[in-house]
Image (tube, rainbow, N blue to C red; front, side, top):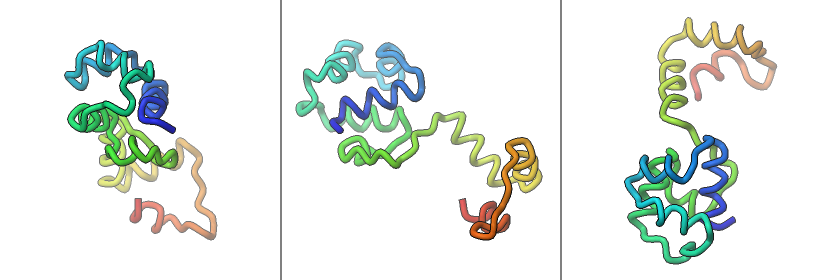
Length: 115
């Protein structure tokens, strides 16, 4: 997968348009548009690649290597995960709401403590 393909995938995951990425990264709309139209895939500057990766909350290496196993999180999702990790009561509530059960392979203690 090429950089622009990974970028399009992340845009689709977050329901972002070119204007959203441009505003969030400070990169010109025309530059973002050119990247996703495959026009400058190999010529993208390191600075722009870093800005784009930071905007999507991923490492620039994953954008270049396109590790499809990496999950991209929005800033809100990151806050939720951090809050979840800090409060045991919240963890238990989330588990009940999402009907998460703990099998033999993954104990409740392991799940809560090792995220």
